[in-house]
Length: 113
Ligand code: 5GP
Ligand code: ZN
Image 1 (cartoon, rainbow, N blue to C red):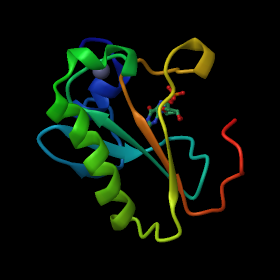
Image 2 (image 1 turned 135 degrees about the horizontal axis):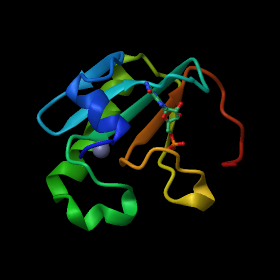
Image 3 (image 1 turned 60 degrees about the vertical axis):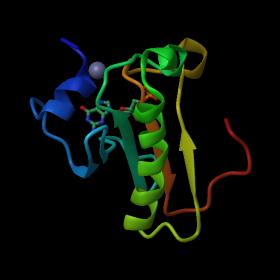
Image 4 (image 1 turned 180 degrees about the horizontal axis):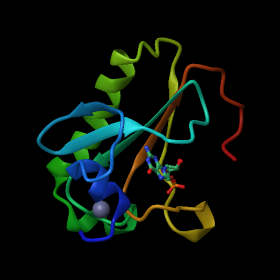
């Protein structure tokens, strides 16, 4: 998808700190980390958000979730971690390529927002 920041990151047009990649998924460190570990996991297929999940295959979606577990182990998040996907304006989604935030390395607050 042209003019999509995360497609450009995935294609290497914009540099990123890659932490994981396979046929379906790319994952990299967030440029403005909100926790000691803050990683973004994206499907290689461009879809704008979870609202467009029907445009991705079950495999493409499932691979994102499987990658999260692998990355959490790779990053030694033995105490746990939080996974967030902002969808649409009420959730303050700012990049319109589906992504899952992995947040870890510190105690999270006991509330979602
Ligand atoms: P959203 O607000 O859409 O859920 O999350 C977008 C995330 O992308 C934010 O946490 C933001 O810091 C991150 N981000 C925005 N631009 C870049 C960039 O150029 N590189 C990286 N690595 N992360 C970015
Ligand atoms: Zn994209």
